[in-house]
Image (tube, helix red, strand yellow):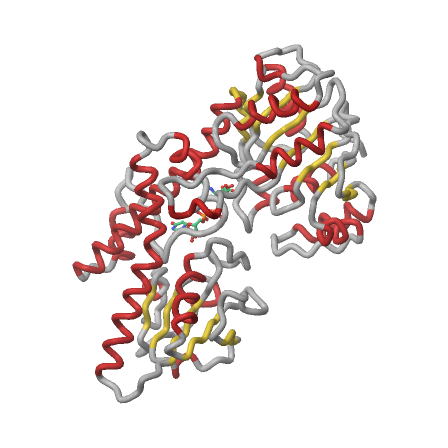
Length: 429
Ligand code: SAJ
């Protein structure tokens, strides 16, 4: 079953949490997909049809398509007509403490370097990685330097040999398969023709609309989506600190104010994690240091929330120690992932909090985390415990992630610090 009128091969650079499901989407429509990655384990898992992702619904779907030879993986470029880049764009780690960390687009340029080796007239390149404004033009410029025999569209050349467009991914981990098919897409071509051709590619599997614009606007749209969420979460986090000082239950407060037809306050927590919302707003700040005051402040508020939670736990520890002869307490931490019901600990504020107490090594630390099999190396003096653990024997319990499994626990008469408001929804409390 080949999709009508589309007889092209699609190469996907970067077989991570976006690349793999995207490959599955095209392959399920009969398109031949080539996956390229620098990680040998990923290439092997694809070629052996043994992909083990935690994304619901992905493993069965993708492993079946691989078995039908519709997806093959390589570590180097293969000739194709369409190239989609889905590699990470982290922030330069060393920049973490300077005014605004810069985006690291080296993975994009490495992928482009590979693509340049097999690029030919008529090919289309689509960049999906979250990128600072201007990156798609840089990519086109970079390729022009490598391939002087071809023309590129960054000079608004609608007749260029190669077409290039920016089309950000917008899917939510945990619901990727559904959202890939059903979320509207923004497509920003370097020329109108580039946009139109990229649109044809997404129409192969999309059950939603494509909105065409220019590349700069599409890049800024992706950054705006995540910065907007970051600012709203910062508002909720600031509110939670104000309420804590004033003895007001912030969860009840938010429920009440959200009854207003034009108010929708998000939920506070121990901070903002993950590789998107905790990172992408910096791409705006780095390029616009004077004008992005609110976006920067929101990042700082969310980044400082784990520190506030740590202080709160330490205050409670001191209160308990003052009233007891014991010097070592038992502390149980519920969750270390960056959000509920996943196993991803990247940039996790919960992990940062547990790391702090494990490094301090003054108390017995227990971690209740049903989504991981072993603790990361950064947590040394702690024990990962399962559902049989007698957490009621702990002196302090800290809820850091609202995993579904935690919502039915009866915490009655226990000393609980709840950073996610699950006690509020729990009848036992
Ligand atoms: N969080 C809160 N309070 C909330 C909502 C979230 O504290 O009310 C925290 C979460 O616990 C987590 C962090 O924010 O630590 C980010 O989680 P998230 O669920 O908001 O978002 P991500 O990072 O999983 O995915 C986001 C999504 N962007 C938006 O919703 C605007 C997704 O659509 C993007 O595709 C993804 O970033 C990405 O790849 O950029």
